[in-house]
Image 1 (cartoon, helix red, strand yellow):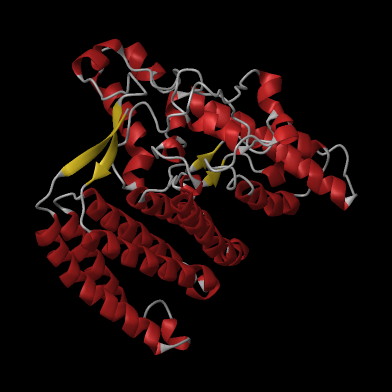
Image 2 (cartoon, one colour; image 1 turned 120 degrees about the vertical axis):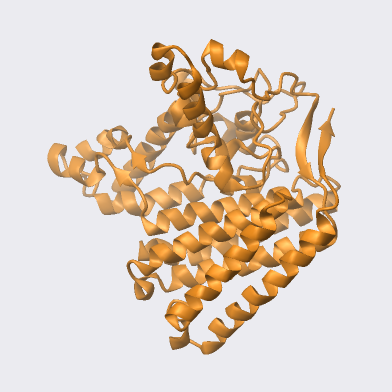
Length: 423
C-alpha cells in the first residue's frame, strides 16, 4: 500500500506530462485528439482508481499467495526467469479477464469506464475501474503458482505490467512493422477501442498480441475502416463515478422490472448488452446504430468554467499527492476518510463539468466538508508537522471555491448541453 503510493508519486506526474505532450503535439501537427473536458474526465477517473488501489479497497476470493503456498511443484530460482514467467502469466491472465469483461453482462460494468471516452488518446488509458470490490480470477495465475513464482514478485511486476499498457493509447503512431506480429501496438488497440462492427470485441491482449491470434480474437486495423471510439450505449457524462456504476444500475433496474423469473437470474451472465425482451421494449435505452453518424457528448462552456475546472484538477493532484506521500503517517482509519473526501471532490467538480443544476450544491458541500475536516483535526491530516502553510492554503482554497462555484453557476448555467456531430 505505502510502496505503491510512493511509485504513484513518480508515475502520476510522468503520465500527466505525457498526456499534455500529446495534446501539444496534436495541436502542432494539426491533429488534436485530446479534447479538454474529456481529458479532465479521464484524469479524474485515474485518480479515483489509484485512490481505491492504494487504500486496498477490495477482497480477493482466492489469493495468489495461498495458491503458491499450496500447489507449487517447483520453485524457479533464476531471477530473470522468475520475472519473465511472472510477466507472461500476468499477461495471459489479463487477456482472459479482459475477454470475460467484454463478454459477460455483469463483468462489463468493471470495464465500461475504460471504453467510455469517445476519443482515443493517452488520457483515456487512465480511465480505470473503481467498481471491482471482489476479485475472482486469481486461478488464472495457477501456471506461475505451480512454478513457485513468489507472491512478492507478482506484486512488483503487476503495476509494471499495468503501466506498460499506457503508451499505445494514441492515434499519432501508425503501424510499427515487425512489432505488430507479437506486441500490442497503437494500431491494434485502436481496433480494440472502436465500435465499428468489424472491430468490436477484438484485440483483447494487453502486452502481447499473440494471445488474440491464438484464441481467435485478432483483427488488423483496416485502412478503409477508420475506427470510431466509445461504447454503443454512450455514457453522456464526464463524471467517472457515475460511469463506473451506470451499467450495473441498468442491470439492477432491468432485473427488477422484468416479469420473467428466468430473466431476473440470467441477465447477469448473458452476453454484454443483453436485456430481457419485455424490459427492452418498455424501457428503451439510447444505442448508437450508425457508428459513422451520431452525436458525441459535449457540454457548452466558457473559458471561465474550463480554467476553473483545471484549477480544481491541479488542486486535486496536490491533495492526492499528499495522501500518497504520507499514507503511513495518516494511518487507519484517517486514510479512508481522506479517500472518501477525494471521491466527493471528483464527483462534485465533474458534475460541474456536466453542468448539472445541483453541481453548485455539491461544490459547496465539498468545500464545507474540507473545512470541517480542518476544524475537527486542527490541521489537514497532520500537515502542520510539515508546514502550517499547507493547512492555511487548503482552507483558503475551500473558502474561495464556495464563492467561485456560486459565481460560475450564475454565469455559466445559462447555456445548455450541446453535442458534437460526427459524420
